[in-house]
Length: 369
Ligand code: MG
Image (cartoon, rainbow, N blue to C red):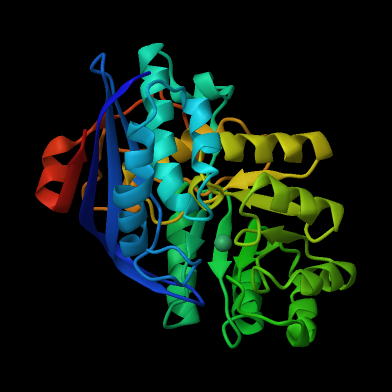
């Protein structure tokens, strides 16, 4: 494909309700969108999952905006001809900034699938089996509020519930939830809020028969993972620690985790995410697709990623309406009453982009040719 133009836009969207983790509170999102046109008139879209502040990882909206507009997009436009598969290697010249890279790379995959008139999931090598979906619930003001929310999500069909935890909002909360929902598929995510000195607290969670605990320790506290894995019976899932195939490989070889959460933005795009999924499949390590408060374009790309995975663990892919009053894609994403999402059949990401809404929500835009 030959790229004719790249448009980078920043839009703002307000979540229907705020979401609180051990590290951040998310209500208004500043989202960067990338639209790439090739010389044959095909258009592909990508979405940058960088958060508003560098709390989840080093990346954040302003940094992604800068690196996209001053380095990544100009370097891509200097390539005369390329395929989506080449973009990862091309961006290897620059360290980090994986969410910015992923947004651009994903747009290239969308174009290339559209050029073939093929759904992106199929172009990537996925299957169209329905994808089981789960949801994450943030830290709330009270346990009662949390119980009400869990009931609502179960009624909507979601197949597993993830609770965000932090010191002080952990054992007591899980105990109350388990007392009410004895058989619920339940997991926890600490976003690195604990240290190895908290091992007794984490051990106390073993009795609740959790599916997994995600990222209990800091991303680079590898020793804590190795130590904890020998002492905890709850499976450990890595999120922030796994930023590449290489770090996934190290996590498996050093036995740091039992499960991996794969996110497109965190690992730099479809090519890298697909290799991580393949690594997991080859080693019999379960993986699932995580979410990052994405709007519809980002979520559509995540659906394509999830179709590459086994369907044994629900991915974090909920309906548009759980997040937004109106989403930036048409139709909006829906999950059926059994909590399954059906891969779209249209070309590329399989959804139309809601230009009217995007234009109305755009705060700044740069067009590169
Ligand atoms: Mg996580």
